[in-house]
Amino acid sequence: MPSVVRVQPDVGALHRSFDYAVPATWRAPEVDLQIGSRVRIELHGRRVGGWVTELDPDPVADVELRLLQKWSGLGPTSDIIDLANWLAYRWVGSPAKALRTASPPKNVYRLPPSQIERWTEPVDASVARAFGGSGSTQRIAPAADRWPLVLAAVAQGNPLLLMPTIEGARALAGRLRRAGLTVALMPDDWARAAAGSVVVGTRASVLTPVHELGAIVVFDEHDEAYREERSPTWHAREVAVERARRAEVPCVLVSPAPSLEAARTFAVTGEPRPIEYAGWPAIEVVDRRSEPPGRLGLFSEELVRSLQRPGRVACILNRTGRVRLLACVTCGELASCDTCQGAARQVDDSTLTCSRCGQERPPVCAACGGAHLKNLVLGVSRAQEELSALLGEVVGEVTASGITNGAARVVIGTEALLRARTDPGPKWRAVVFLDFDQHLSALRQRAESEAMALLIMASRLVGGRRGGGRVLVQTRLGEHRVLDAAKRADPSALTAALAAQAETMRWPPAVAQAEVSGKGAIGFIERLANPIGLDVMGPNDGRWLVRSTSLDTLVEELAQVDRGSERLRIAVT
Image 1 (tube, rainbow, N blue to C red):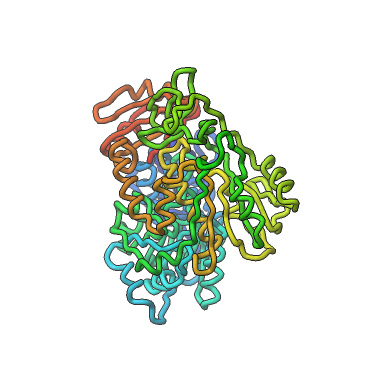
Image 2 (tube, rainbow, N blue to C red):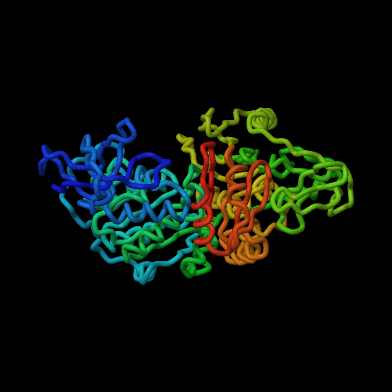
C-alpha cells in the first residue's frame, strides 16, 4: 500500500494533479489502490472524485497532505491515463473529461480472471493482410459482409471493434456471441473488457482498458458520430490510431468512402471492382432542372411514379442544421458558389454571398441569367401530409423525436430514418432523398463528405444492386461529384478532388484548424491576438476560425491563452 498518491481531480477546469496521503487504516486486499484507481478527495472545502495517476511521488517539501476520503474502485490503466493526457493536449481540453469517459459507469472493485479471446479457425488470407504492419485503410462497399474482417481482427487476440451507433454495436456483439466468443459490449461490460475479451462499442469505447489488446478496427470511420460534440471535440478515429501506435498493434480503418484523414493515415486498399460495384445499389438521379419553368414543388412526377410502385420506400428530408437554398424560378438552377459549390445566400439586392467560403457575386442565375430567385423552405411534417394526400394512403413519419406509423409502406423522415428501426415490415425497396441539395450545399466544410455518408447509410438500408437495391436522389446539381462517385460505386475520384480542394481552400486536414465560439469567444480571441504561425479569421455568426500549418503550433498557442470564466467552446479538427 503506498503512503502518498498523486490524484487528478474530476473537475473539468483543473488541468493539474495534487498529492494526498493514504489513510493508515487502509489495508490490501480490501483496498486495491493502484494507478487509475478512483478515489474521493477533499478539494477546496468539498468532496470530489478523482483518479490516482502516480504512486509514492516525490513529496512537496513542508506541505501537510490531506487524507484520501474513499476508494471508489478500479479505473483506467496507466496507458489509458497517458492517452487521456495526449487527448487533452491534442484537442485543447481537460484530461478529467477523457478519464471520465474511460471509467466504468458504476463502481468496479475486482476484475474477472484475465484472458485472451482469439479466433482459432482459418481466416481469409487476403483479409488478414489488412492487419499487417501498423494497419491499413480498407474500402469496402456498403452492402458487403464485413464478417471476414471481424474474424481476422479476433484472430489477433482481444480486439477493440468500434461502430458508429449503439444499434450496430449490439448487432455485431450478438453475432460474435453466436460464434461462441466472449464479448464485452460497452459500456456495461467494462470489467470484462479490462480483463480481456472481444470488446465492441461506440465512440467512447476507444478509451476502454483492454487486457493484452491485439488490434483496433474502426468501422465506418467516416461517420461524424465518431466526433465528440462537447469540448474537447476529440475524434475516435484519431484516438484509435494513436492508441494502436502506442500499443504497437494494428489499426484498421474501414469505410465505403474513406475520409481524407484515413487516406492520409494509411494507404487505401479496395475490393476488386466487380465486387465493389455489386456492393452498391443503383443510384438514380432526378435532375429537377429539366422540369417545366417555375416548377419547384417537392414531389417530382418521376418521384410520384416511383412511390406508386409496389414495395416499401423510405423518403429522407433533412433540414436540421442545414442552409436555406435559393433556386432560379425560371430554370430551377440552384444558386451555388463557383469556387467551392457551397450554397449562396442573398444578403442584399445586389449581392449573393457563399455561406461556406464567403465568395460574392451578383444575384443572377448562373445558368440562364434570370434575376428572380426563390427560397426553398422544407419541413418533414408538412411533406408527410402532402405525400399522404398525394398517394391516398397512410405515410409514416420518423424524426429524432419519435416514430409515427413506422411500419407503413412509405415512410418520410429526417436522417434519423436511416438509423432507426421501424420494423416490423418488409425490406426497403428504395430510399428517396427528396432534396439532396440541402446536404450537398450545406455550410460546413465537410458537407460533401457528410452527403456521401448519407448515401452510404441509404445504400446499406436497401442492399446491393444484385438484390434490387435502389437509391433515388432529387437534385438540381445533377453532375455533382458526390453523386457521380456513388453512381460509379467508386469514391476514389471524389477523395482526390476533396483532397485537392482542402489544399486550395486551406481546410482540414491540409491545415490544423480550431473553431472558437461561445460567450467567451470574443475575449479569448482578443487575448490570443495574432501570434506567429496562426491565422485568425472571423467573426462569422459569433464564430472564429484559427488555422495553422502545424497542429502543435495551433494547440500550444491556444493552450497558453486564459479561457476566462464565460462559456467557451474550442473545436479542434
